[in-house]
Amino acid sequence: MNLVATVALVLALGVASRVLADRLRIPSVLFLIVAGIAIGPEILGFVSRETFGGGLSAMVGVSVAIILFEGGYHLRLEKLRESPTALFRMITVGAAITWLGTAAATVVFLETSFEVGLLVGALLIATGPTVIGPILQVVTVRDHVAAVLEGEGVINDVTAAILVVVVFEVLVAGNGTPAALVGNFALRLLVGIAVGATVAATVWLVLDRGRSRPCAAPLHARLIVLAGIVVAYGGAELIASETGIAAAATAGFVLGNVDLPYHEAVIDFLDDVSVVVLSFVFVALAALIDFGDIFSLGLAGLLVVVAVTMVLRPAVIYLSTMSIDRFTRNERLFLSAVGPRGIIPASVATLFAVELQALGRPQEAQLLAGTVFLIIFATVVLQAGLARQIANYLEVSPMRTIIVGGGRVGLSLAQRLEQDGENVLLVDRDPDAVEKARKRGLRALEGDGTDADVLERAGADDAKTVIATTPDDDVNLLVCQLAKTSYDVEKVASRVNQPDNVGAFESLGVHAIDLSMATAWSLENVLERPSLSAWMNELGRTGDVQEIEVTATDLVGKSIAELNAEIPDGCIVGLLTHRDGATEVPTGDHELREGDRVTFIGQTKAVDRAIKRFHPHD
Image (cartoon, rainbow, N blue to C red; front, side, top):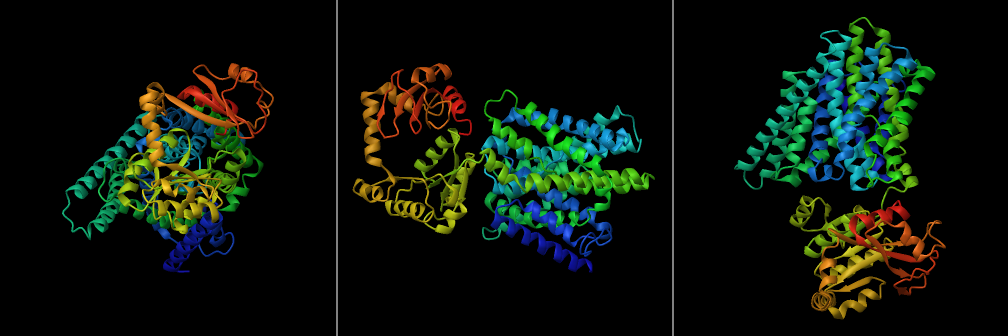
């Protein structure tokens, strides 16, 4: 096949893989790598190492730069603050453990030199947005878990790309002393960061001060951002090799955390471009997998895979999340089980296998390529391919709460529910409301909540709760009707603006909140119960109220006195709702039965610890 036909085939397979993955809710990387192997020399033979000539390295480099720019662009500071300690440990101590531990496993099991072991270890630090992004599109996890996975993916991709070059030049090629390794690494990292930050500042200035016609401005913004990615990557590479990745990721991170004009247009453009380049890169590189190199490793190669995935990864996660109460046991297990390797190891391994060949070390070149591709293949198939099943088994995917209406009521409610650990998505047809929600760190979808297609895109078929909060009762009623009849949502609630309409909502089985009565009740509390009112207004900051259902075997049969003895200081059992619906303030002698509901009241952290003590998945 000629080059044009090959590129067309690769892109067609890539896009088809993405569509199929979305339909089956399986991460697209699994289909991409299978498609690449199918057209590679091992099966159909449409693509080989000679197909792209010397241009593959440049095409992959620019494609990876675009993907990492997009990953950095979505990596908001608000998201990183979800769990900064765990993320910092993962990109420092965790990266070092992965590097040195993988190197040791490679040396011990594959009996190679320590320098090559360090080269393999440096490559396999990276996970990357190319594999993490598709997983998070089909697996919903809490924000602090997603933040760790996304942050690790972007930052460790940069670390791996630079470290592998430094290891090769200093230790393998012998162009320097081991003492120069740290300095060389730091210098390249600083070059990438400096170039990326400079390009980002230039792009922002051009867009902010530009005089484009309003109708053409969004197009110009997309083109300028694309040019900025290529300039950041190419400019850094001119200064020092393999620094372009750091420059692209830095530029994306900086621009994603400033008030960039035409932000929504840029996001949509990056999402579309990333789908195309990710499809191309993954299929093209998968087509270059040499199963001969992989099979030659034998049992020793499988032992390296076990060491990387079942020993090192869990150890890194344990050390990174140690003493952080926010991570449940099952969330730690999920993070341990999901750490697939992506494009950086695949693309750079191919490059340095050629370099080792040039140095007259063909056996080590074969070992390097075989080991890296074996771990990529194993982790993509097992970890990425089964990520949703793993998440469901471990129960780390909280069901979604959809709020239709991004006005003051909807926005305030979304923020409070997010603080309570709910998985919230805000839906509004007004782009300004959506943008405002996103600036506050909330997930938001632009669309009409009365449209079944929009609710389906929002995940209504898997939603736990749908809440309508618009100022229009007709809209709210239609949203509730769709949620109840079309998606069988367990819990549906609505703001009711006109008291006469409450009956219509309640006839559907909707929890109707009469706005006038709610306001009157709040005013009465302010006047008659000022202390309670002040405390209720503080909920989410210093105090909290949470409710659990008695289902755990260690709660059934216990008395309230025994329960009080086990909950943290600063928290009490305020209410007990019996399974028959009766609610009362319990005495210490009350015995809990399955189906009862217990309400905890107290300081936010104490209530959170109590909930996790008895319902660790909530």
